[in-house]
Amino acid sequence: MNLLQDLDADLAALAAKTQASLVEIHNGRRGHGAGTIWHAEGLIVTNAHVVDRGSVGVVLPDGRDLPARVLARDDECDLAALKIDATGLPAIELGDSRALRAGQWVMAMGHPWGVVGAATAGVVIGTGSAFPEGPGREAIAVSLHLRPGHSGGPLIDAEGRLVGINVMMQGPDVGLAIPVHVAKNFLRQSLSTS
Amino acid sequence: MPGVLADFSNALAETVAALDKSTVRVEGRERLPATGIVWSADGAILTAHHVVEQDENIGVGLPDGQTASARLVGRDPTTDLALLQLSSAPAGTLAAARWASPDALRVGNVVLALGRPGHTVMATFGIISALGKPWRTPAGGQVDRYLQTDIVMYPGFSGGPLVSATGEVIGLNSSALLRGASVAIPGPTIKQVIESLQTHGRVRRGYLGIGAQPVRLPANLAQQLGQETGLLLVSVEPESPAEQGGLMLGDTIVSIAGQKVRGLDELMGTLGGEQVGQPTAVAIVRAGALAERMVTIGEHK
Image (cartoon, rainbow over all chains, first blue to last red; front, side, top):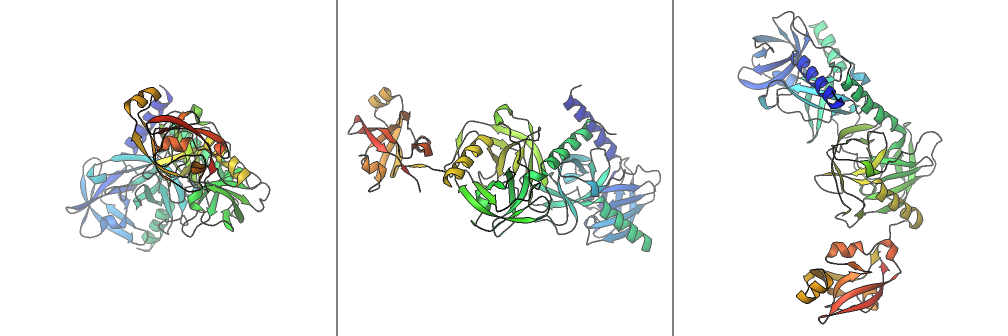
């Protein structure tokens, strides 16, 4: 195999591995978002704007459609924690978003326009909260296109570790994700007090 | 599962980090800052013309977090290039970027675009989409080759380096060169423009003082000259090099210094800075017959 074929094989393996920790999230019949399996005992992390109103359901990669309870949400940082009644789920491996470097490879997964389990790849443009025309809060800017349905899905590094939660676009060509350390803080604070 | 993808990812990030001391922030306009490339460690900074709206007190954000003051050495709006000079460059803070010839580049090669609109270096990644012939920018600048990529120009990346897989700089990115395409000015053109800016403070362009439009030549002349069209003079400015050289309204220019002139592009191509002050043979069609006048090319101000 040549180098490109090796790359290809790595990409496909990463996508397949990550798909196992990627769920669909729906509000009754309306909307369609993504979520990431954080813990094997049914803890799912997604965007707050994905679980806006009404009852929330989670579709697992094996097709099971389970009702979910919203454990916590934070509209400011656009995160929500859901609980479903399931065990032994393939939780995603957590990475270190503080160690991200400009130029490193990342992949976003979700259900853009309802296409389930889709992958799109790019590089880290920059991280932090101070970059020009950024959202003003801590974010990862990535050179890939996030579409409706990507929200709440995982952003992973070259070794398949979760580094961010997909959230939105900044302009036509720049995707934004919430760093995983922000999500960790959100879970620690909201789940210890609730 | 570290594999070739992880190696690839590391190589990208290391390439970006290695150019940290060669990539600076340029604060030369009201709205957001842009990027500059360190041309020499003594503080010569290359950037895009359109991001520098003032000539003095230009702020340059250094890799160590400090901001230094720079002045404009010169600018060339036609290629969207500008050269700045720091009043003082603290030793060790800057490293001149290494430049590579674009001759070995191929469509499909990977490239990185770097910028420092904020405090840290940021990057986007893509491939070379098109490599082509010499071209002329809409502003009239002559560029040694067409170099287009599919990189995303993040806000403030103008003036920053386009970097090859070897970590060498192959061009300067500007979002103002062509709308809707990521086009870079390649190293050879940059080198030429910088030499001119350092010597003259500007890029010299030849000047004739005419208004002209392409017209079809009579069949017998077209066959004799081997060209279908020439440039009909629709105006000749008083006291201009053209008038002083004896060109008249209604003449049709067919060549300058032996180079065919079939349209405005080719006219501009014959009026490079090296022609300024040179008596130059201009072949024309006047009253249906070929003629020649010697014109001393002026300088475009």
